Length: 234
Image 1 (spheres, rainbow, N blue to C red):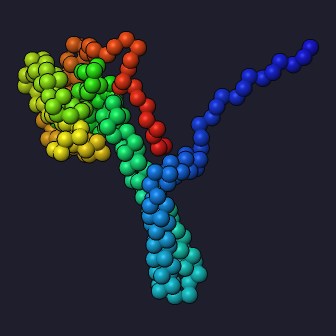
Image 2: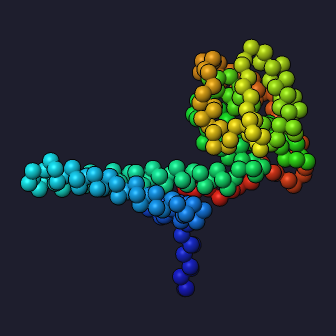
Image 3: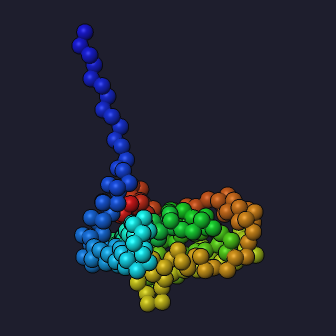
């Protein structure tokens, strides 16, 4: 009897080194200066390590080697730090201005906030949206789009939250093309700066209270503009 073909092996996740290489390639493609900054970030600590080793090892081979190794490790960490910062910048540049960009950023929001990448209100014609986050700072409402188009959506959502939770502070953020709007890359930092006014049990109660009312999104059938999946560095 002929032996049956074995099922194909499940596709494995790329290893850490391969992921770093993919992030580097993506970053270098969109940010030509990144590779040179990384090179400088690596070489400088190595040179410092060698200089310190020559000055203070005093003929001690072990100390000489350890200082050089410390310089190399510090150089690797510096290069990885630069890669992470430049890769983040590339990702923000790619998704900025696209529908659902705020939702993508909220996926990596501070842990002190309960967020969702799905909006609580959407204008199906313009794809402007309102997102909501709940945390120690109360309720945060984030408008995605120009102020002239999102003001009414934002006020409607604010009135609804105030009616449900009259004593909970509400903080409003505008993310869009307006000069006084919060930049997409600044949103997580802006959430961290909101003054804390609730305890953890109160945060849970507020979140449950809002969830019990549900959300009705006016999205046309077959269209889900908030599920845009931009290419992300990993």
